[in-house]
Length: 131
Image (cartoon, rainbow, N blue to C red; front, side, top):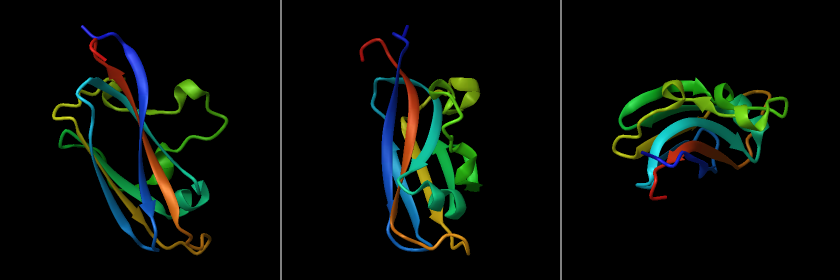
């Protein structure tokens, strides 16, 4: 039985050229018992909001299909800190083989001139009793 310790893990991808497709393959720590939810943020949220789309897989299961607008799992200041994660699997997703893959796509947009930016994937997790 787990300790129910809930933490967030952060994983960054660098978008350095317009129209770039970036993949980040993540292996979660062995102490991760469940994935509670995910959130995307950026040092240039305006660019991510207008230009970004993504695909997210965990344990080979598609959580968000290719082409999902990044703004779907962005949260603003009006959302309380405890509610800023998009839940996976009703808030308790088994990480299985511990592999998570983020495919992020930057697409040209007439209202957002490209500049290099960083996209951060936050994964909200439950740690097991040996964490």
